[in-house]
Image (cartoon, rainbow, N blue to C red; front, side):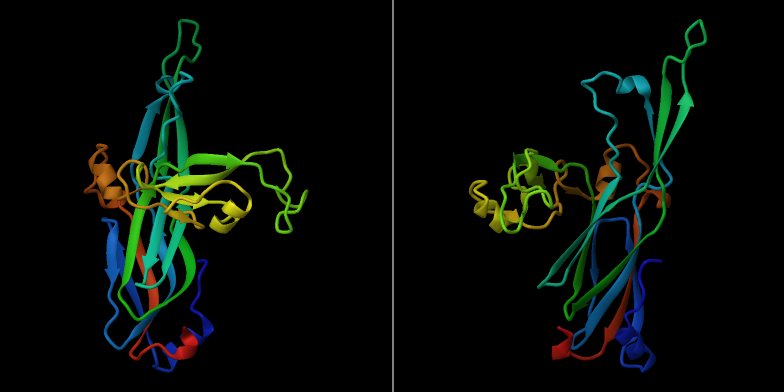
Length: 264
């Protein structure tokens, strides 16, 4: 487990000033953690069981042997979880552990292996994350799969007082991805690097209206965040199987009072 109850929160729970609670969700990608009026919640950890467990994606090597056919896309490999409090937004992207197994296929008359089968599956290991999110509003929780992160612009990083030569990419002849699209093709979130301000300071061009300094996907069935059950329903994967769906357990403390000024 990679999270623990913060010391002050634990003391408040022991003293009866707060109540330890859990919130369990899963399946569909949109959930709401209710926070009662005149109360606030401190979310300090979560356990995420990723979507896609219990199902093998089976491919034959000849299906992607041609150079023009990419290696099979692992749709469950990158999953995003985010929290919106009404005032703040906290996105978390996870690469999910994948299991790859091989099985011999056909052989020629000499006994040489001609092709083989590849089985890809999600290793359903729980992902634990430490948090400290305070909210006196209901908390919106969003989960989904990310299949694409499209590089739009690449540039060489100039030497500046923030990007010195040798210690950073400043002055390197390499061109780095400085604009990446996450989301709908026509209105994607534009992830700008090193940051939206630096993008213009480094003379990389004008910022689009939807520029952002964080990498996270926005909902879209093709290019962005996709609800796991929506994906499974359109891919022949058993959407009603409990094993293939994601599950999330939120750990939080509920305070029956308004947020103290010093808590933020």
